[in-house]
Image (cartoon, rainbow, N blue to C red; front, side, top):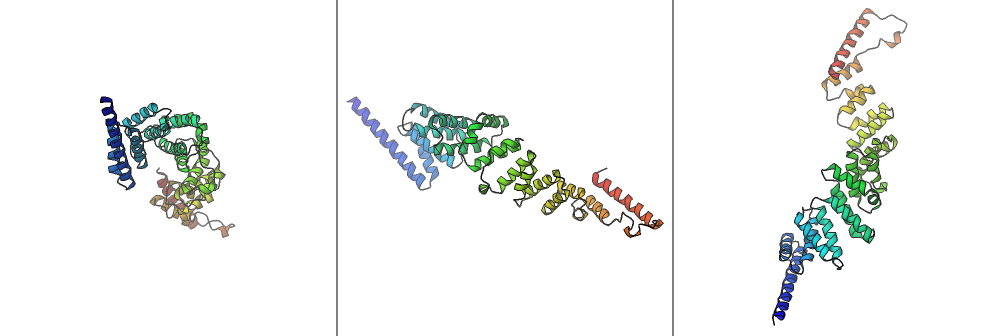
Length: 328
């Protein structure tokens, strides 16, 4: 009789568990995320028959909302994945464990698990492709440079061949570029130009500029109408010894140090006349209107005393203004 009673209790427990899980799913389907999350947590706390499924749902929900996942949840789903080894539900638990690592601040661990699973299952699992994108995007945001670089270098070949989103590729490439790894940043970029937005083109321009390939830097920088792109194009022209084009490219940019420098090198006094710096503006006006040279149509005549005095005075004024600009 006791065995029968225990069996009936277990059946009732499973029915109650299943009923709460169903209610949680209905709440989520109706958009009541908080109620659905609360019910899932109740099932997990009871540790009943449907606790593993509820835990997977809870992790998916938090990941979808971009919420941080507590380490205890990550540890619990890891334990369930071991317990259900060989069970048809094992795959879902493993994927949930990876999600939990991604959103509990351990995307490097998630990447390790992803590539371990890829070796077991192959690389044609669409769920793993999605997890790879999420893990790498989060990895690109970790504060620790060493952790980021170690994970990238350790799985460089696998990552370069993996199927993951352009958004994640851009995130990894940007982090590598910011750390000074220009060639490696290029290796992680998307291949098809047609898929690239302005941000990707600017990143490519920066990376090519970083490795000294000014022609490709110009190719991408000139294809974008953006202040940063124009700055890269101007610097590329400068290194190609084309100061005039460097100055021309920056005409539409707000006044900055590089714009002023290139205009100064190109002797573009018209542009410098509108500089924000009062000293630079004065210097440009002196250079533009100062009449430094003697009249060109009087080559065969000696300069008059008045013109010589004017030249000396103008030169002295230019020197004073120039010294003021340079901060002497």
